Image 1 (cartoon, rainbow, N blue to C red):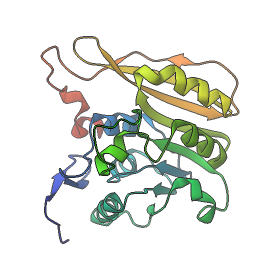
Image 2: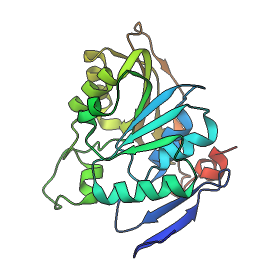
Image 3: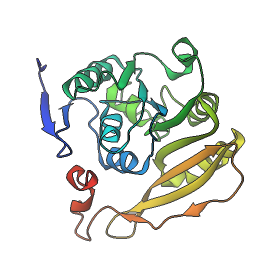
Length: 240
């Protein structure tokens, strides 16, 4: 496979899976590994990933889930190119399909509701400190507002379908409130914290049409006190 300038192939240390990354674009972080480890797609189910980036979450999900198919929506051309390469690199073209379009246009590509939707969306408010480049669109709500994410998710999911999301902890109340407004009841959730007990992320599982009642799981510690990333969160540990 031909690599472009700045691209490199990295071993995900998980059942032979690999990922092409480019430091000039948005590279995946622990958010992706945490979400991939948390989400569940059962045998025969169809999933949709909103904002797939390089495709790493869906690719990692293939190691632990016997799903029928995942459709990835990605709006940015440079990340579309990277995601397409990564799907082919891991021989997953029969299980993972890249859709090069805004997820708000999903009706063009899906004829019926799906079982699972998952996303590591842009969860920061838009600032004026950067131009509208690849990284900004991936991190900030330039093209995908939380309202739009949840409205589309609710339409995509069948009754009883599951939504998995990782989001900024400081916006967790907003996330939960807007899930409820769209008929998505949060059933499981946990927070991540660094070695100094600072909370950074919230991770949820919500179910369309479910009754109220949430299980709060223990916090996931991602770093040691010295700031070093914990070995348990490396993809090779995830894969076991």
